[in-house]
Image 1 (cartoon, rainbow, N blue to C red):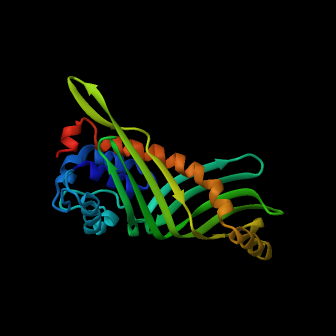
Image 2 (cartoon, rainbow, N blue to C red):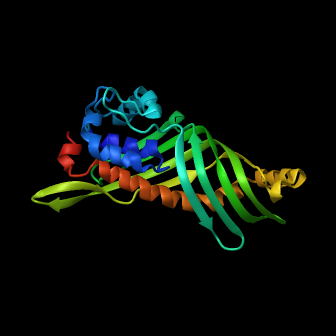
Image 3 (cartoon, one colour):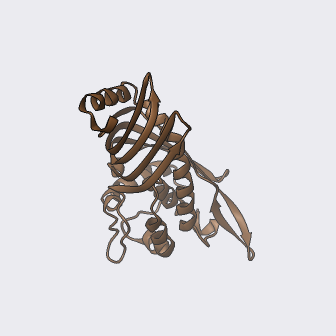
Length: 258
């Protein structure tokens, strides 16, 4: 079943968005999905979810490196870059993130796969045990009684993060055939443990920098929840574009054989 490969692309990208991934998939999708590193899972397999999980575990090293065999190279997904993200919630919160690098994505664990072929979709939940994020920030926010300002490098460690994907598709009639296309992919992050360190808070005053980071880490979800909606919106757009590149000009029967 090729559709599992589409879902796999969605899960593995976590939409941290790379145009190069989309370009690669567009030109090489058919040959990549037929390469020997992938085992095909049948739609009628009563243990379909377990089959997909086994395939993912088998190709985990390929996912991280982007090496799927001779002549089949793709951008590696771990580490994974994000060029820029801007969040502006008014005077109380403004943040620019640049040159972000995410490490640990390939260590994800599939927690649940629920397919619903009659309703044309499936839900996937993955867990990221530990993810390291670093880059540059420009921040102005109110937290408790502090007005936090700063600009410089940052580090973030996330533990036990869950990502829930809701993926649905429809059939588009064209030239007597019905081609599969994806609706905008829905995803939700559920953060657990987080530890920030922002260098150069308050223009690098060491005492105030320490106090500022302590205030952030006393409840890191305040900062994470400010960033989360913008991150999710960015990822939805990127993942939907990637998924539709994968199935471009393919019918449901080609992608979903019995």
